Length: 111
Image (tube, rainbow, N blue to C red; front, side, top):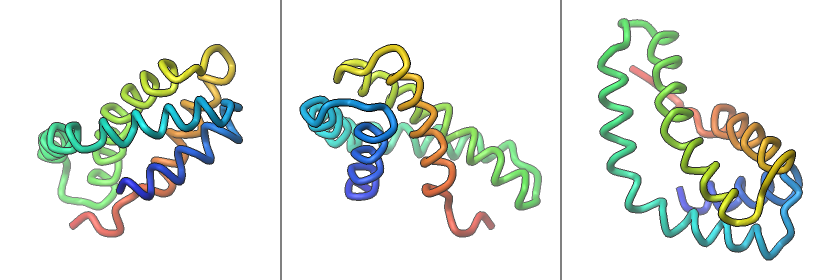
């Protein structure tokens, strides 16, 4: 997970949000430090939301996507804002990260 988010975060922050390499480094360092302590709360949040699903794959997929975006995106906003993103760069970075999380971070099976 650390390798995945470090790689995708670096690509997003440098080439989508337009952060300088120094700010990308700060954001990735902050991300790694925060990843471990937020993993369990995210799991609890995700499990709580997934209890609301209907017994079909689409419902599970949508609730899982909501769990991911509603928990991880606000954390990511804080990380890149503190690291130097603002205005258009912040907006593009958040959109880029959200798309990457949804497209690349999907579970392979929700049964």
